[in-house]
Length: 243
Image 1 (cartoon, rainbow, N blue to C red):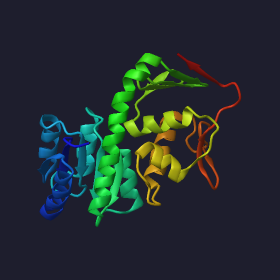
Image 2: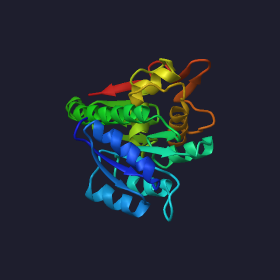
Image 3: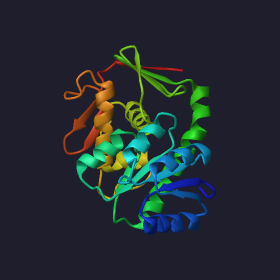
């Protein structure tokens, strides 16, 4: 969305300049910094609509920055890093990142992802008043999903979900027993094509299972459909929608 504010955090000046150039071409307002401490300050004063965040920086790395921002904000965070191992990607998404791109990257692909996250955030903001008006609450055995309050209770205790984890859970739970292909589910929740890389989705599913499943290693809610993807699994009659 033109006019949206983007915070770019990277200690490589050429990367920062490149990202800023492409963001400004789209009409975004861009604030840049090359270190984690200033990133935290700008996250508060600049109030960005999205943050593009490098991982490897001096003094404070991007993972620590993300964790501190996540404690107070749900702003979309897109990691851009030369660290491409699955363990790094998993860690970045586990600490609260919404997306993860590896360097070198296509500037046009970065722009596409930024647009998708901003569009998704805008849709969520517009949808929340309708959710509150509808008062929809999804109830399953041991699991309650409150759409207007955007809260989830597991066996009576509230659990914290990131924005993407909540969106993913709601999408699956609203159509129980429907199998979603990985690419299709990624596109629905993230708002752009996976380009064949669905690791981000799989990490979010793994994190979600750890938070809502009695036994994450043997999930009962979000189950894998071999050769397809995932579905929200319930027994017949084991659901109730309250309005």
